[in-house]
Image 1: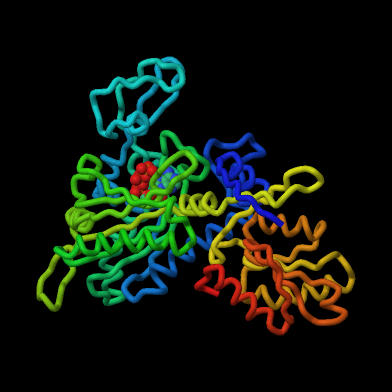
Image 2 (image 1 turned 90 degrees about the vertical axis):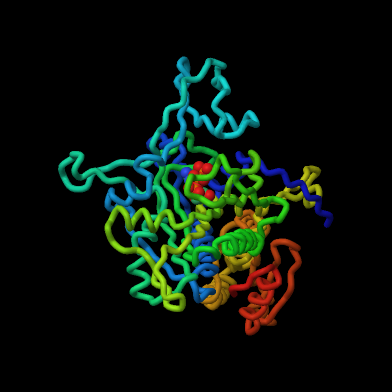
Amino acid sequence: MTTRHIKEVDMTKIVSLAKRRGFVFPSSEIYGGIGSTWDYGPLGVELKRAVKEAWWRSMVYDRDDIVGLDSAIIQSPEVWIASGHAEGFTDPLVECPTCHKRYREDHLLEALGQPATATDIDLKCPDDGAQLSAPRLFNLMFETHVGPVQDTANKVWLRPETAQGIFINFDNVIVATRKKVPFGIAQIGKSFRNEITPGNFIFRTREFEQMEMEFFVKPGEEDEWYDYWIKTRFQWFLDLGVRAENLRTRPHDESELAHYAKGATDVEYLFPWGWSELEGIASRTDFDLSRHEEHSGKKLQYFDQEENEHYWPYVIEPALGADRAALAILVDAYDEESVGPEGGKEDIRVLLRFHPDIAPVQVAVLPLSRNDKLVPKAKEVHDTLRRLFRTQYDDAQSIGRRYRRQDEIGTPLCVTVDFETVETDDSVTIRNRDTMTQIRVPIADLADQVREQLRGMGSTRV
Ligand code: ATP
């Protein structure tokens, strides 16, 4: 059989596959939907869990110098006053006086090839060409109230990032763990931003999950660690099978940096609409700890026993969106190939070439048909494998269709139970998603063979 590679990723194909196969559904769809809000289906939730698990492993389990945390979404409003978010977590909003569409000024400027901070450019509405309003700063934090009475005394914000929950627990973690600088605190959790222009599927939404790590270092050592984290985070995507040609780093220029930041670099991915931020790595100086000390009155300095001195550690922060990472991995895995004409028509195989540690289903177990002998045997095989891998049992439709369905959801291996299995050899076939080759193995060796094949496809975790 000849195969011809015809990959062409367009977002409508991704969004439609995601819905059809149960990765991502438009939220509140039965009520007409709520713009740019998405729900993760049975496969999507596995994909996102696997992404978060891979991040947590690389940050917490595989290292001695980072510990985890899970802080609250609703925190004291003082946190956001101290951090500067109450005043400064804004985007410049411009509005069309005729069609009333709203845009982010910095995005329109970037689309024109201008610096995001340019001030002397007349912007026109991309839809109807009318002159847009002057920019107004729009705070992205969602407000709500705690308790039954809505007044200013009990106003709170939903956190727009997970990072501040880490800074306010800096001292608690030090006291509880006796960690010594350099060390980090990692957190995964939901964040909320009232984005002016959410869009591009799960790339920019108002409710999303972040994976952030604050790494505390001795002042003077921050540049070394900044470089280290840029390289380490870039490598993480490569290790999960994201193609190198679709990844790059982009250092921010001076005009993009927050006043306290020493440096910031984005890891960008070549999404179907162009290069966009996937992750940000920032060198944040001692801004956060010193601000919280100033506002709370609580000492947040670190005592360095070797040097016999107190200081606020400097911070390097890698911050990644779990949804954005899942989207990049989904887009990167998407492939189509022509597997030769069938019945005079070109036959296209759609597949997701997920890395085996990320694939929502790692092994599918399929009886050749829904036969009374094959089904119990296949279920028995499935029961052994499900304890070791993420598995799925499937006996609906023809075997050819089931292989295609597993290709389309990115399952690396399919194990098939046939008549020979039950009548003669107690062996099964393992079919490889990428090569479509099949090997026959005794059931007694199956778990080892599956493990070996998944490792051959890049797994470091099975
Ligand atoms: P952008 O410039 O795209 O608005 P940002 O620079 O404000 O992003 P950060 O505050 O650095 O983003 O957040 C860290 C990471 O969190 C981002 O790199 C991204 O992966 C994720 N993220 C931020 N905002 C969103 C969002 N609205 N939807 C999904 N993920 C997001």
